[in-house]
Each structure stands twice: as C-alpha cells, then as structure tokens.
Length: 279
Ligand SMILES: Nc1ncnc2c1ncn2[C@@H]1O[C@H](COP(=O)(O)OP(=O)(O)OP(=O)(O)O)[C@@H](O)[C@H]1O
Ligand code: SF4
Image (cartoon, rainbow, N blue to C red; front, side, top):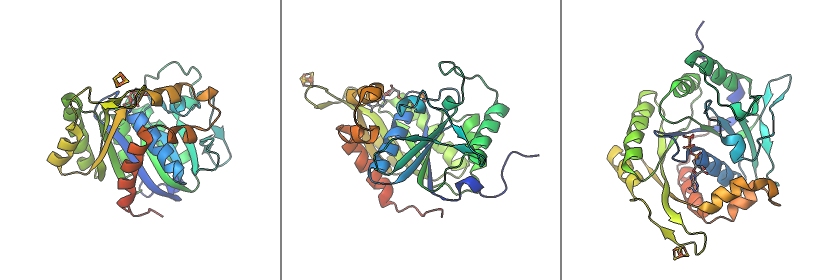
C-alpha cells in the first residue's frame, strides 16, 4: 500500500497556515530562522506549532530550551511539547529529538524509515487549533523533503521560506531548492538572507563581514520575493545558550534583541501577503 495520503491530512484540519523553511546548504541558520519566525509570530499573539523534520540533526529542542522534555502520548495521539509564552500567543514543538533515548547521538536511518517517521508526525500529532505550523527541514533536497511534499500534496501548504547566506556558494545551493519547490508545486513565499553582517555586542553597529546582497540578487534573478536580511547577532546565541538561567520567557527575551526588529519586518512582509487560510 502506498504511504502517500489521498486526501488532506486530518490532524492538520484546524491549522490555518503551513510554512516550510528550506535551505540549500547546512549551517546557514535555517533552524534559527524557524525559531525566530515562531517567536515573532508568537509575540504578535498567534498560535504557532513547529515541526522539526531534520531527522539526522534535530536542533529545535535545544533552540527552544526543551532538551529535557518528552512528547506526551494521549489516546488521540502525540501532544506537542509546549513552550512557556506568558500569554503571548502559544508555541509548541515536535521533534525526533524528544523521542531519542540518547539525545547526543544522531540517527542514521535509511529513506523508508525517515518516510515512515514523517508520515507518523503528520498523522499522529494532535496540533489542535493553530494559526501557523512551521516545518523546519534538513539542508538540501533529501528523503525528508520528498516525503513531506508527498504527505502535504492534498493539504494545501502556504509555501516555503528559503534561507541563504550572502556568500555565493550558499546562493548557488539555494537555486536547487528553488527548482525543488517548482517541481513539487510549493509556492515560494520568499528568500531570507541570514548572517548578513555582524552586530557588534559592544556598540550594536552592524559590519558587513561577508559580501552582502546575494539573497536579493537571487530573488531578482528567479523572480521570487525578497523578504529581508538578518545580521549575525551574538546576543541571539547567548539567549539560546543561557535560557535556563533567564528569568523571562524566550518570547520576551527575543523581543529585546536588536535582530528581532529585522525579523518583525520580514514577518510583516509575509503577513502582508494575506495568504489564504486553509480553514
Ligand atoms: N542571525 C544569527 N545570529 C547569530 N547566530 C546565528 C544566526 N543564525 C544562525 N546562527 C547560529 O549559527 C549556528 C547554525 O545555525 P542553525 O542551526 O540555525 O543552522 P541550520 O541551517 O539549521 O543548520 P543545519 O544545517 O545543521 O540544520 C547556530 O549556532 C545558530 O545559533
Ligand atoms: S563595532 Fe564598535 S565597539 Fe565593536 S569592535 Fe568595532 S569599534 Fe569596537
């Protein structure tokens, strides 16, 4: 029997928007962009779910300070792990990282096992009512991408945000990602250029340490929207690493960072598109 659904996925029927986060290359900050998208949407009051399908390198439990948490199994299915938001929207996360006994070990799975895991995430997770479901994917176009495209075929996702860095090599890889989206009929919501300059932790000045503008050029060449750029902010890394000692929630801590204003502008461009709700 085929693993592909032949109708919209039932567990997603109360999810208004589904956005995938893609990148052609590893380490360009896809999980950071997913995390910041979630925190920004949450800050505006939206109900956000985050699904991590980066099965060989699940980093979202660490990003959201949930490393010690596990998924709760109810009679209806898996309940996503909640993030404390202190009333600003809501946020919950599903990742293979929550299911591994030895969390420091990465999984080495063949395609069929990855496909089965992604299908289980699609069918078994009880997201409830969400405004946005963000799906963080592995770099490149791998088994996970093909599986999620098959699973979502009848579920009408809004599309993909593509993350790149200013360097040419990352830009070249992103072209493959754009071609993938076109092949599987994912709408491209836009490109985000991450690591675009460096914010000095002393004076908050932004210096261009690599050439910048690659993301914008790429967007122009491929006639896709450019959503904006995010500099490297060492305070972001510090916020992620020290969240257990923070007295405030991650949503509140993020709002204080200077890159959060870059991100608000990016999200505003996504919201301005007025993507048709799925339900
Ligand atoms: N704008 C930024 N400012 C500061 N640090 C950043 C920024 N973007 C990413 N980072 C840091 O760079 C590292 C890699 O980022 P991240 O894990 O998000 O990349 P990725 O593309 O998801 O990686 P992978 O290919 O492993 O999935 C992380 O330590 C993250 O905290
Ligand atoms: S950006 Fe400003 S504070 Fe930072 S290292 Fe340069 S001169 Fe010093």
